[in-house]
Length: 265
Image (tube, rainbow, N blue to C red; front, side):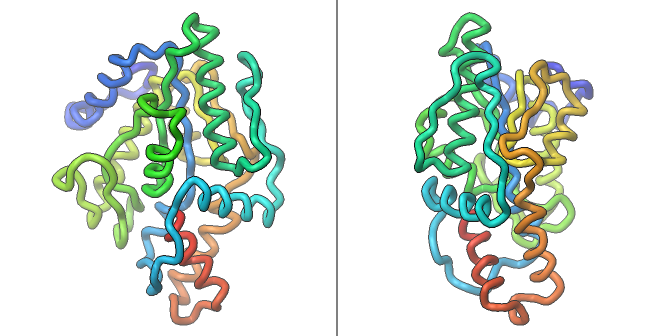
């Protein structure tokens, strides 16, 4: 299991095997893990809003939503480590935080592969707590076609399972009403970080830090928007309100935000 400091027991090893084999089969000389922590795991401990969906998650709607939050909070300028290993990626003026991050991931992986002797032999490992973000990246970011490994299973909270979501694999492999499968997928992600060369994070995340404690990652980890957490600035305060006061007691603007979070993540 790569440079993982801790080794999995037999049952977890069987679940990990297909993803490890995929990484070996691809023969990538550079693999970059990218982590997008949205707070959906925290949201899923509370029942979804009693309201219809307003819009669907797409690359454009996600970017617009994340850009509005970046403007509201005052995020620092994005920093990409690709220039440490080669040419820096060029962004478009219309790129929001998500596109900017994904372009950075691809550019960093290419530059690391180039340093290893084959610029085209690169791949990525996606870690996210959001089923919608996963789906959007898989369907709408063609630069990653055939270059992404992502574990299947339950997206949700590791203690509460009010509204977890299954993604990837078959329904037989996923029970969104039980928090234990979330633990399993989380442990799979933790171990697979031991097979990458660098970890990039859209925002700060304790999960990525914990993963780094279980593996020796040669190039370390980097945050694109340093010292920012959308969970702290937006998601968790709304989750707390909905958990304690409830939908019926919430102000109109907070209801709109709660619906938006469920639509996007």
